[in-house]
Amino acid sequence: MTEPIGDLSNRMRDVFRLVVESYLDRGVPVGSKAIAGQVSLSPASVRGVMQSLEERGLLAHPHTSAGRVPTEVGLRLFVDGIMQASVPGPSERAVIEAGLGAGPVEQALAAASATLSGLSACAGVVVTPKVEMRLKQLSFMPLDSGRALAVLVGTEGNVENRVVPIPPGTSAAQLAEVGNYVTARLAGLTLAEAVGRLRAEQSRRREAIDAAAAELVAAGLAAWSEDLDQRPLLIVKGASNLIDASAAADLERVRRLMEELEDAHEIVRLLEGAREGEGVRIFIGSENRMFALSGSSVIAAPYRGSDGQVVGVVGVIGPTRLNYARVIPMVDFTAQALTRRMQ
Image (tube, helix red, strand yellow):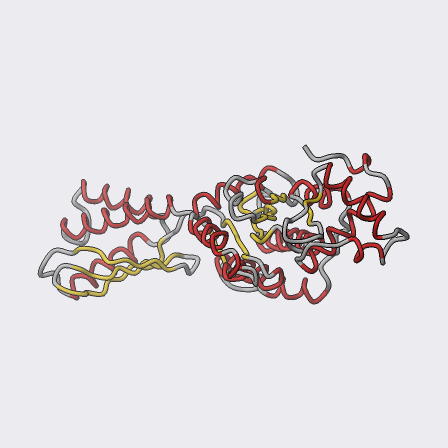
């Protein structure tokens, strides 16, 4: 449990704040001489205060350096009780809002992730709304005697494609006929609704295409619907930002982090925890099980749809040593901008 900030003396609080700010800015252990020049204390007195802070678990003393660094407990105390957040400036707000302009929602969400990544030098992440895809068009391109490329276009402009098996000897004209039938008769329906109507027409023998083709389409749409339903709806941009200047000296940490980022289901599960609060949620290092080994922090905030309900989460994944005062308000503003975009 983090120690209440009120339990620290003014002297301890001032030294602690300066150590954390210096470490977050420079990324190296902070010595007493660097702090003594900013407060009315001798280096020896500063060392005494640092020792007291270390005994309280707020600072750590790396073996290779005479300086101190904040612990995860110390960072939590700093974020919750000392840090003065800085509101995103006009240029940052303009960049964020520009990416959320006209175009499909998927494009705006990808832009939000990429913009956050660029502004924060972290990995930008977005959990997208789970919306059922509605059919607009289906077309086939023959590849060989037993396979074709099926291209499915949704009403929102999203496109899915996959290779599907086809009966040997199926001609390009027959595939075009199947595509035209689906586009004409099933457009506007969700994939599940399209499968239901096609099955119903099969049972009544009212389909305008032969039974084998109808079964092929029904089975394909059913599988497609199941895949989309189970897919983690996650956008990650800028993961390479997490390989910083210290990567060469700590390849094991980088390896773990890259493995963690590949587990989309677990990232979604972690970010879903941010749905529960009204504002920004901050997970520092081992506070979240997923990124405990790589020592990463997650800052995330929910955004809402037109009905006012939470539909997704936006945020960043970065090192524990990041500019919390700048990034936290940036994530919050992006969540608010996405909420306005979803109206």
